[in-house]
Amino acid sequence: MKITVIGTGYVGLVTGTCLAEVGNEVLCLDLDASKIAILNGGGIPIHEPGLLEMVKRNVAAGRLKFTTDIEQSVAFGQVQFIAVGTPPDEDGSADLKYVLAAARNIGKHMNEYKVVVDKSTVPVGTADKVAAVLQEELSARGVDTTFAVVSNPEFLKEGAAVEDFMRPDRIVIGTEDPKAVTIMRELYAQFNRNHDRIVVMDLRSAELTKYAANAMLATRISFMNELALLADKMGADIEQVRLGIGSDPRIGFHFLYPGCGYGGSCFPKDVQALIKTAAENDIKLKVLTSVEDANEAQKQVLLTKIKARFGSELQGKNFAVWGLAFKPNTDDMRAASSRTLIEGLWELGATVTAYDPVAMDESRRIYGDDARLTYAENHMSTLDGADALVIVTEWKEFRVPQFEEIKARLKSPVIFDGRNLYVPAQVRSHGLEYFAIGRR
Ligand SMILES: NC(=O)c1ccc[n+]([C@@H]2O[C@H](COP(=O)([O-])OP(=O)(O)OC[C@H]3O[C@@H](n4cnc5c(N)ncnc54)[C@H](O)[C@@H]3O)[C@@H](O)[C@H]2O)c1
Image (cartoon, rainbow, N blue to C red; front, side, top):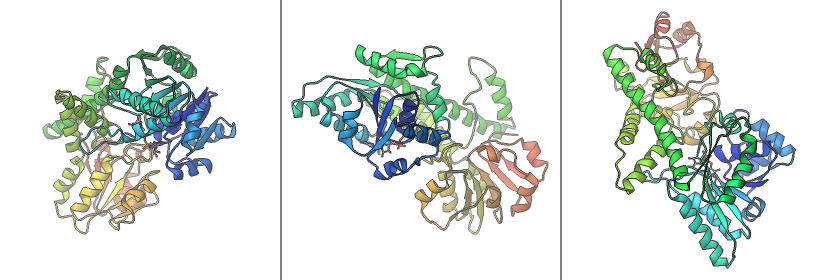
């Protein structure tokens, strides 16, 4: 099949590359010429395990191409995936300007039947808006052709995106057009061989399904974060509680890890957008409003612990920070807890020395050359001269450190662990003070 993917970010580039990997011809469009230049130069603009090799393989095979040419991209694919960003608007609702601009570009140039697929996470009712924009542009040109709009939300996780796309748990296809269902089934046939993972539903249910999934996961995290705060106060150990409840199959072990708040490009904005959609429909989502409030508070938890230990006047103090990305295996720092921590430490007068295996370039892009933030070559060298270590992201290489060396290199032997990486008694046995989240 010939497929166009609009937007070459975390979702679009993975989608396009994986579709090429199973034999399709894929043209990826982005209006950001610098991204297309990187891709055409043999690189990729993001960090995603396994992606670079797959891109190279498919480019070499002639199945994967990149362009900034809208007219060419519209002409290319019978299926046009829209995978552009839907960042939060000022009021928290999803900003649809990129999605509708992409749809308008398709409408301006299409001359034959196309399946336009919303892969971006978009509020219920967006497919109707996309269809209206397409029709408006076709009518303006007097072109008489039909099209289908499909909602096909993406559930991949950054850091495991290629694996998730190649082996999806489910493939949600929302449309009322039978011809589009046939085309989408054919498109996904190679990802659906082991057993049928395709769930066909109406458009609005598909749009809501994506928000429901992220909202449920965010809820589990905020629930555990609040219980961890209680455990801290009551002398219970949240890790024991996790094991105690996760063994119930109705609950399960996934997504029950407390920490210093969820971040990233999806949970915060999708929870906010769903709350906003509901409010526009006169429904207050009380549970999700609390999930969001609890997360905002949780992003302060490390700062609260640091202030309790070191006081609120941190002039002249330096903190070593391990991890900048919002989670391991990605360079994405959108809404990352590290940003709340770093900016909070700055406000209190402290400086930061940080290390992240892949997100330091992204951090430099965000913070420029602010002298209050310096970068170390590896995680252990952040410690030299630092007053304490703060762990924000659970990268594998942080999991089994030499505690004696940490103690020797820090000015004061204190660790604040926002991801509960270690066994408290073991850390303390090395003479380190250890502050984790809800751990005894
Ligand atoms: N990142 C994730 O883990 C993830 C997972 C599931 C769903 N989603 C959803 O997928 C969508 C994309 O997310 P992302 O993280 O890939 O975003 P991103 O910001 O990494 O990429 C979006 C890309 O779209 C490009 N773009 C914007 N307007 C364009 C246009 N009119 N034509 C062509 N290109 C255009 C931008 O230049 C950018 O490269 C969002 O709605 C997001 O919520 C993201």
